Amino acid sequence: MPITQTKEELWEKVLSHMAGKVGESSFELWFKPMKVVQIKEKNVVFEIPNRFFREWIEDNYPTILPETIEMVTGQQMGVKFRITDKEDEALKKIDTRLENRRTKLASRGIYLNPKYTFASFVVGPSNQFAHAAAKRVAENPGTSYNPLFLYGGVGLGKTHLMNAIGNIIVDNNPNVVVHYVSAEQFVNEVVTAIRHDRMGELKDKYRNADVLLIDDIQFIAGKTSSQEEFFHTFNALYGKQKQIVMSSDRAPIDISDVTDRMRSRFGMGLIADIQAPEVETKIAILYNKAEAERMKLPEEVAYFIASRVKSNIRELEGCLIKIGAHASLAGVPVDLTLAKTVLKDLIADEDKPINVESIQKAVCDFFGLKLHDLKAKRRTREISNARQIAMYLSKQLTNLSLSEIGALFGGKDHATVIYACKQVEERRQRDETLNKTIENIIKRLKH
Ligand code: ADP
Ligand code: MG
Image: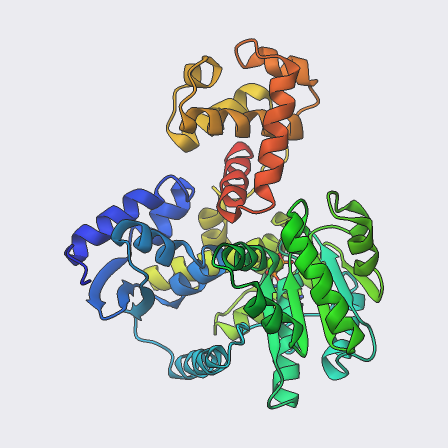
C-alpha cells in the first residue's frame, strides 16, 4: 500500500509523535532541522545538514525514526540520509564500506554493527581486563573462556566489545553462524514463536549457532519462558563447545528474578567487569573519535568535555558530536568558547540543589503538564506515568523517606511511592525510550 501523505505531512506527524519522547533541546537541535525529501519504495529519505546528525541519531535514537514512521503510516520503511554539506570523500568511502559490510552480514542473518571493532576500542585501566578477555574469546572461540560474561554500567562499551568479538570471528571463519541479539529481542522472538507455534524454528536457529552473543541479559529476568528457552540453548551450545558471550548492566549475583541454575551458568566461564573510565581514557576516546570524524580537537576542549561527562562514553561522544555539528553548521573551528556555549545546557552543575519540588517541576516541564496534575487524584495514563517517574526520581535523588515523598505528592502513602519506584525500575530494564526520558529529565535538573 503506497503512503498517502505528502512528505511534509508525514514529517510533521512523525515530529509531533517524537516530541514527547525526545528531550526538548535534542528535539530542537537534531530533529527539527531535518527534512523528508523523498518517499521512495520502502525508504524515507531525509536531508540533514551534515554527517554529525546521522551519527548522533544512530548513536542515541537508532530506532526512533523507523518506529515512529511505522506508527504514523502503518508501514515498515527504511530510513536513508542525504547530507547537504559537501562531504569529505575519504569519510564517505569508509561509511559506504561499513554500510556494505552491514548489508552483506545481514543477508547471512548476522546483525553485527561493523563500526564496533577492537581497532576502534580504546583500552585503559577501566576496561583492560574485559578487553583482553574479549580479544582472547574472539581469537579462540569456544575454547578459552566460555561463557564470557561482561558487565558494567550504561555506555561503558559492552555492546561495542560484543560486536568486536563477532566481527573478528566472522572475518576468521567464512561460514560461521553468529547470532548477535539483545535479550529484549530474544524475548520478543520467544513470544512470537509461542504465539505462532514456531518454537521448533527458534530452537533450531539458536541451538545451531556457532557463536551466541546475547546483549543485556538482565532483561531476561522474570520472563519465565524466555529464560527456560535460553537455559536449554545455553546447555546445548555449551555442550558442543560453542562460544557464548553475555553482557549485563550488573553482576550475575545482582540479577534478581532469574533461577539459580541460570545464574550459576552465567558464571561458569569468565566474568569480566568494565569500570567507569578514568579521565585519561576519556580523553583518548575523544581524540580517537575526533580523528575518525576528521575534527580538529584542541586539547583544552578535550579536557573540558572529559571533566564534565562523568562516565557514560556514549554521552562523552555525544558532546563531541554536538560540538562538531555546531562548528560545521556555523563554519567555525572547534574551540573552548564554542564548546562551552554548545554544552551549557547539557552539562551538570554539581552545586545545584535537587529536591522534590525541582524534580516535580522538571518532570512537568518535560511532559508539558501542570504541577497540580502531579499532585491531584486524576489518573490519565500520561499523568500517572509522569507522577511515577517523579516519585522514582525523588527516591533516587533525595534523602527523603517514602512517606515524606508521598506527602509531597498530594498526600499519597508510602505504598504508592514504592509501587511507583518498582514500576519505573522494571520498565527501565526493557524500555530504552524511558531510559532516555529519565536521563533527559536528570540532565535538566542539573542545570
Ligand atoms: P554499553 O553497551 O555498555 O551501554 P556501548 O558499547 O553501546 O555501551 O558504548 C557506548 C558508546 O561508547 C559506543 O558508541 C561505543 O563505541 C563507545 N565506546 C565505549 N567504550 C569505548 C572505548 N573503550 N573506546 C571507544 N569507544 C567506546
Ligand atoms: Mg549496550
